[in-house]
Structures are given as structure tokens and as C-alpha cells.
Length: 172
Ligand code: SF4
Image 1 (tube, rainbow, N blue to C red):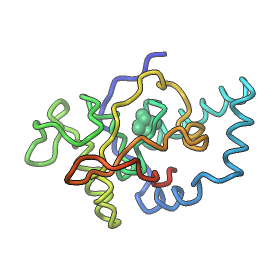
Image 2 (cartoon, rainbow, N blue to C red; image 1 turned 120 degrees about the vertical axis):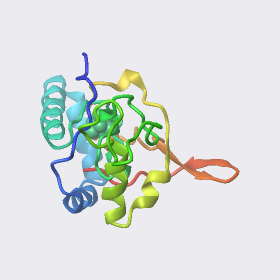
Image 3 (tube, helix red, strand yellow; image 1 turned 180 degrees about the vertical axis):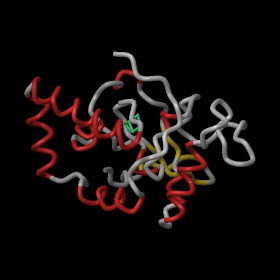
């Protein structure tokens, strides 16, 4: 499956609502059982993954990388960065916050910072993301999240290096 080309996308979901949904969808035993049941049935899995693709594609320009970073990027998809940078902007950001590749659009990382900071979550942007695992493209990130496969997606950074994985903030 080929993902759509990366292009910066302005989220259609307000940041307050996104963080509310994040709390509602936090993993628990119920979601774990539900996601295990969906994964066990091929058609249900395909249907669920298709639904996620439609919803998140519309709201966030999701490209289905299968390892969602939205909870710590102010719900701005970093895979919309034309360079697919998951750890902050490149050096080409315009002084007005514009993307180097698409100057008519805003850099996803500038927008991520603004949205997270507006809710007191600017510290999220300091987390260090692991490189994307390309084997997971096309998978449902919600199922991966509820099954605990996203637990080491990002680390906090300490002066002496990295610390063990932090508990992921909750997703929408
Ligand atoms: S699953 Fe990946 S591509 Fe989709 S919104 Fe999350 S980070 Fe972006």
C-alpha cells in the first residue's frame, strides 16, 4: 500500500476537543479486549482500519503510519512534513512559520508547538521520537495503541542521555 504524499495539513479538530478525546480513549481493559477481538477477525480489522483512515484522514491528514504521534504534537500530524521529520522542524522554516517545501503552508512543527503550548502542553514537544517503523504503515494506530505496541514510541530526554520510555499521553 502506498501512502499519500506528505503535505502539511491543518487539523480540523480543535485542540481542546482533541485532548478531551485523548482522555476518553486512554487504554484500559475494555479497549484492550475490544481491540484484540477486532484484530482476531480479518473483516472487522479491515473495516476498523478503513474507518480510522477515513476519520483521521479528514481530521488530521493522516497517512496511516500506524504509530501515531498526534498526542504529543498538538494533534498536528508530523508525517505531513514533506521531509517526514518526527522530531521537530528542519532548518528551512520561514520567518513567518511557513514550510520550506510548500511556502504557502505553515510548518507542521510550528503549528504543533502553537497548539500544544496553548493548552500548557509545550513540554510534549521535547520528547524524543523513535524513527518510524516502516513495517507498520497501513496498520491501525488505534489498535496498536490499545494493544500496548506504542509504549516506547517516544522518550523523555535528560542531560545525560535518554531515560526509559515514558507513558504515552492519551490519543484521540
Ligand atoms: S497515525 Fe501516523 S500518519 Fe496518521 S495521524 Fe498519526 S502520526 Fe500522522
